[in-house]
Image (cartoon, rainbow, N blue to C red; front, side, top):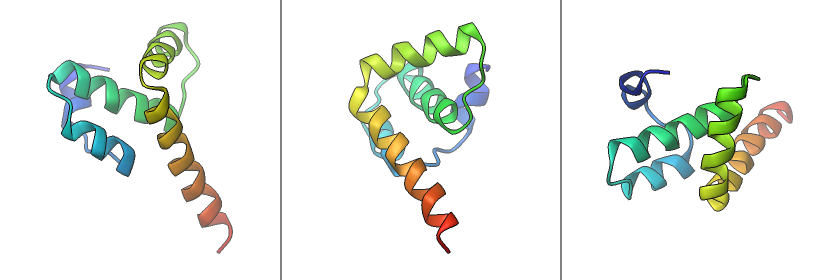
Length: 80
């Protein structure tokens, strides 16, 4: 995904919105948005898998927050 395309999209989770407030470099913001997009729809190719793994290892708490938020949305929507 091109950096401009990543940065132009809005975050979909509260966890990433909070994390973006402290992101000081565009590359860091792009990584956060990439991780969120990957958590939502993980494509299976080596490049994205490696990048997502690297970002998850660097931000384990954020990765867990994103995953929990997405799961609560999924299961919350299915319970209605």
